[in-house]
Structures are given as structure tokens and as C-alpha cells.
Length: 420
Ligand SMILES: [Zn+2]
Image (cartoon, rainbow, N blue to C red):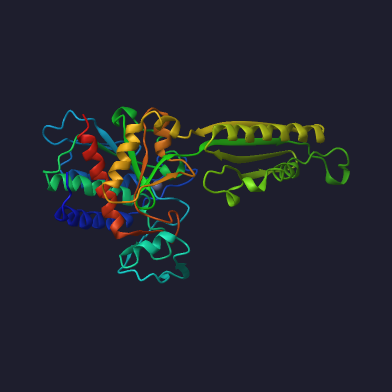
């Protein structure tokens, strides 16, 4: 299938219009909220999307009480028997940065000079912040006003998927197999698949939630969380000689033994790390939480062994001290599952190349809903949205990316629809 200029022009306009509409709708998720989804605004945002899907003549839609949207996009005539593919994006924006009252700004014909923001005169977006910016000189770039994130993560993904659905409706000559469009809440909290109904999604899915143009991700961290409790002994400090076991103080010494070179600040590419992010306590008891990350599970196992050795040394050194360590396997490297399913990755690669983009294969230095789905038996690589500097007030997306990502989605479904 050839996507002609008329279709491209239509998609560019449609996806831009949708994107500008969606980023203005508040859908920030909230850390440690006592409910799921964490915020009501994600449900409200979902209602708007459901309406937009219905306007496209898609009526088989479930918007459940947890905020999940499952929309069945019927196949073109004669393509009903083709394999169904799932397209996934998330409804929430990161709680790390304000996401309310987002006002998108289009910087037309970007000249390569630093971009200034209306709502924060100190904030500057320059090529050093994001080398990809250089590729977009002479093009239009969209950012927020400097006081909020933009929300291209993942409203670009939603707009791109809907633009493709619109193109299918408007140009019936683009024939395609069955597609299930799924939008999840609370992805930014790492719990986007918590209440998912696996029966409602196809056995092959793609998340549209990545960064730069041409990017394809099908490897992520092997992720562990460690909770370490230090049980000490409190005594009046004036009479504590040879008696007090100061749990919080010992905890600080304990963590100063982690190699600094293996911290997020000093690691990149395929290097793993320990990351202590919570420590609270007093003389009696201190509790620490850290995450351990690597692409290779065996390296994480070594880090856990090291923590066990430290525990033994510290318990020996401070008689009476008790250290309890518990681990939780948060998610697995999804390549373990995708390696067995080469076709899923190969078709995604081809879809990107067919859009005349340079393929960029990345390992995610984090996790995705796709990683969790892959571990549940639904292989789910991640395709770019085109947005950059996610979770930041400098977040931006070049206008062209909205078109190119949509084009890749069209190619992807076209390739699957012509698989025998
Ligand atoms: Zn995202």
C-alpha cells in the first residue's frame, strides 16, 4: 500500500489537531494515591477519547471502571480473518512535572537558536539539551509554555493512533485487518497493566510510547526492588556507650558501601545500577528502599549477593543489629520473550524503514507496560511517538513526527494485514 500525498496531508492535519486538543486536557497521575486509577481526570480524559472514537464509527468500545479503553476497530472487507494487532498508549502524564493548564506553543520554522518560554524566562531549550533538535531546523516544533510539561508522552501516541483510525475511515482504499486500540491509565506510576483484562487485547501488541523518530525498543531493564530494614537499639545518648545500636546511622554507613560508579548519575547505555531512593528511621529502626537495574539478570543477582555480604559484615560489626532484606522482582527484560518472536520485531523494523526513517534500536533504561505485557505472554515492543525530553518543562515534539509516527502505524498494520 502506498500512502500518497493527499493521505499524508490529511494525517498531518488530523494528528496535529488531535494532539493540540489532548495536551490541553489534564490527566496527570498521582503517586501513592489510595485508588486505581490514581486520578479521576484520567477517566474524564478517557470519556473524550471514547467520544472521538465513536465519531469515527467505532462502536465496539469498552471504557471500564478502572479507566481502560478497549476499542475494536473492524477490519476492511475481506481482511476479517487476518491476525488482530493491539495498539497501546497511555492516558496519564507524569506526576513529576505539572500537567495542568498546558498551553501548547508552535514554534514555526525553528531557526536553531535557543527556544525561550513565556512562563519561565530562565528556562531555555537548546541543542545541547537535545541534539535531535538540530534535525528539525526549518521545521515546526511544539512545546509548552515553560510552566508545565507538554504531554507528548503519551498524548502524541494517542493522537497518532486516532489519526490512523481516521485515515482508515476517510480512505477505505487503505485496507487493514482487525485492530484493537487500548488506552491504559497510570502507566507513569509503573502500574499501567494492574487491572488490564488480557482477554480483551490481541496476542500481539505495540505500545506507541517511545521518543525520537525511527526509534524501536524491545529490550528493557531486569528490575528489582529491595527493602532493607535495620533493627537497632535505642538508649539515652548520654548513657549509650557500648549499648546503643543506632539503626539510621548504621543504615547510612551501609549505603555508603555501594559503589558510586554503579549509581544512576554515573551510568548510561547498558550499564546497570543501584539506586537508593528512600531512607527513614531513628535509632530503633530504619527502613530503606532501593531499586536495582541491569539488562542482565545475572548482574542484578551479583548486586543482591553483595547486599547480603554487606548485611553479614554489618551484623558482625555491630553485635545485636539485625538487618532484613527482601526483594521484589518488578519486571523482566522483555527481550527474553521477544527473542522467541522475531517476526513481531522484524515487522516493526520494516514499518519504520518503509516510512523512510533511519531505524534506531534502543534499550529502554526503564520499563514499559510492554515489558509487563510481554512477561504475561503478549509480546509488546515499543515504537516512537517523536516526542523528546519527556517528563520535563522542556518537552517538545516536532510537528513532522506526528505524521511520521502515524505513517509507521499505518505501515505496521498494512504489513500484518498482508501476512499469510
Ligand atoms: Zn509514556
